Image 1 (cartoon, helix red, strand yellow):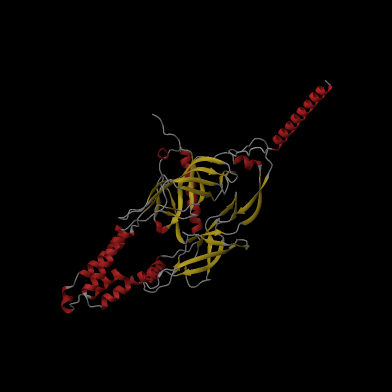
Image 2 (cartoon, rainbow, N blue to C red; image 1 turned 30 degrees about the vertical axis):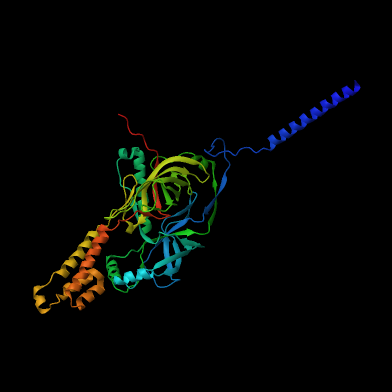
Length: 476
């Protein structure tokens, strides 16, 4: 009996030890298991928030928009190039690179055209076709005399004379927004236009006489190449720039919790290059806020926030000179700390190449338009061809080859200056009106038959985006 009692006691002790050991392991696992990471969906503005130090850093790949202030004749690699900053550069809510400061650079590379292109231009009496010029900007010169070295590369799509295009105005009922929001949008677009005009006043664009002279020189078989005043370059930083820090106060943090007021217009730079000829419908697009949105003295949207959306309509350019169209919308605003807000935003204004002939409709859709000068250019070419066909009866007697002037004009229409010289020298009416007919035919084909022009918005294109919430249509 003693042995049975002993065995029973040992079993109870053994079972208790096992239970205690299992409980200890379970408790330790519960204490060591990590808690799931919280999902940051909304800011918690309850309770005081200690001040934070926000770095005022211009990130790598940030573009600086530089405009040439003077006409530059291209001569050699290493030739100095000077410009000015067109759009201010911000870090969070502070201007760190003001508009108007000087930028120094140089010509880094000059690349000639291909053999095929050179031959084609030579057939058109141009023996000095345009060369591709690559620019590099390497120094900022501030108004107080301070200089700051920068390392940049110029992105594709820049190097063109840019103009500022605003969307057409329309009534508030058509836009589907309130009168207050419509007024806010209009005021913001006008302010952006004034800022652009002020920045471009520093550009010494050529006068009418100089433009006429440049046109005549460009028609010569051998002529120099220029970079026009007002040419814009997107110089992307290859290294970040540090401008210190600022304190994010509780008041500033609290102001970031509210959505942008309806009708607000934010300055943004396109992160996704777009073209009506290659971009597909529903393609995702992003734009980064380049200037903070302020409501009075209250910061609403800091620089560096990102708008995300998609292309909702695209029509590529087609034959018979039908031009391309492009329409986009933005539906999400993402702040630098990762917090997201749903918005409804569309294009209010855009800086685009002057040669692109882009127009915005009242809902922010971009459409390429044809230059009105195409009618004048084609009319001139057809007139020259008609003159080359028209013979002077009196001249035929004295000169069976036809009138020298008529032949020269026909050659001018076909092959510019060389064509005019050959037309006058070659005693053949057939030669003169053949060149005239060629010039007229090419002008008609180029301006009215071939494929139209696509809407092209390069990466880093500056835009004004109207942000707000659409109101439901009124019920009757």
